[in-house]
Length: 369
Image 1 (cartoon, one colour):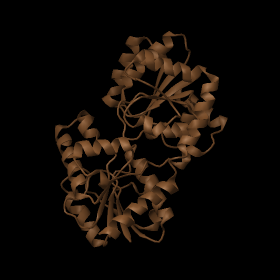
Image 2: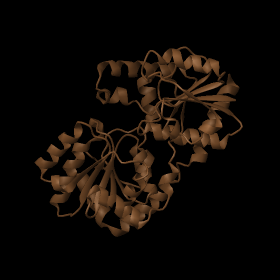
Image 3: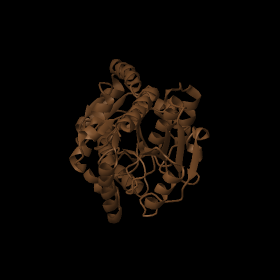
Image 4: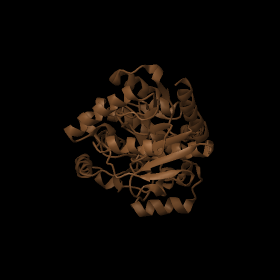
């Protein structure tokens, strides 16, 4: 079987890690197949398995008319038996059987995630088209499956849940020197709570700052580190922190490279996720794998992904959320339980198991055709 992967978004945060982990695992599990990796210029280094297939560099921009011509041409030229589009855009002209990953229904639930109204229309249109055109839809949680059925109107039997894979780099033990080095680089002087996420309204950074201010008001001496590219949102968050009187206790770390992330997770006292909507919540299992207790918003896919390995609260209620944060910081016995359960929960997102499930989707689909 010759499998083509559309990996042009592999350089993006979140979805890029999903792409790299899944495709590397599939190639490792099934080296007997032939592979075509469709990638954007300069992203080849982000996939370790490129030596096991043909890398086709395409300059066709994602979310463009050009891609609707360029990708079918590649599929025909390299005689693909199957296309797996690992984000939600698929060619409208169908050249071969198609599998698409739709991570969530974010563009329907929070359309403001895309600032351009044209982008919103295109995203919704292409997501609905993908649901209609693709032979199978993969998604990363039962919660996302329900949303896809609701907003795209597709048959639930067409959708298969295959969770995101935990990147093995988060399973490596972190030494004390690397933890100290990361803290010094960020200017963190003591214990800290960590959140990793881009700036979007649904990510609820403002709610986190409100809860952190309540927590500090109870006398808990701790810092808050917010990591991830915030863009124009950083000024808004700094202003909010200043109004709350906690600006000296909040560290804006900006983008943190992958090689530093495991140490950052491991150094944190608690990992917090105040996000109001996630199709999966990759950072939570990364934190758990690094041995860090997790406190999360009680909503969307987060309880499904975390299982019994996290504390949950309403992130829109600063008092309730602050109480869970304090509990996760100060209760030694609870922390031990959360750390143990976190390791067990992270093990669910095993690369070999998820790759094999995905390969079965390919084989079953082709056999039925």
